[in-house]
Amino acid sequence: MPAVLVYPLAAMAEIAGCFAIWAWWRGASGFWLLPGLASLALFGWLLALVEAEFAGRAFAAYGGVYIAASLLWMWGAEGQRPDIWDIAGTGMCLLGAIVILAAPR
Image (cartoon, rainbow, N blue to C red; front, side):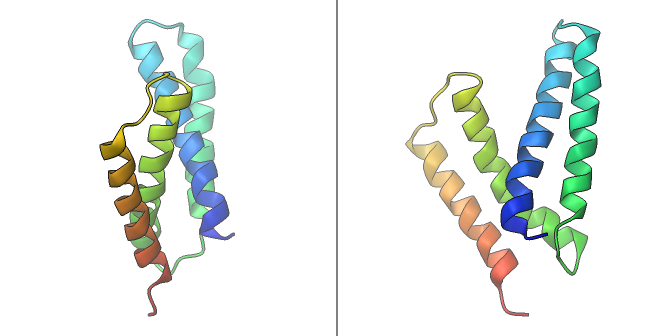
């Protein structure tokens, strides 16, 4: 499956799963763990679908997408709008992900 489709889905699954555990750790109901663990399992499965020669390269390129998705989560779920530095850093990370995935080998 193309990384451009898988990475955003994997990022949302990872962030949702980590957020559920983060919320539980800070006092939310233990029921947060069930969807959180399911979401993290979905994340792992989705990332395994990326067509890359090496897992490390797929994971490294995913990092840029994860950073962008984390800031979108911060904005959408937590109500904190990214600032210019967040946006600039995200752009650099996404450019790095593109270089990693699209480089001729």
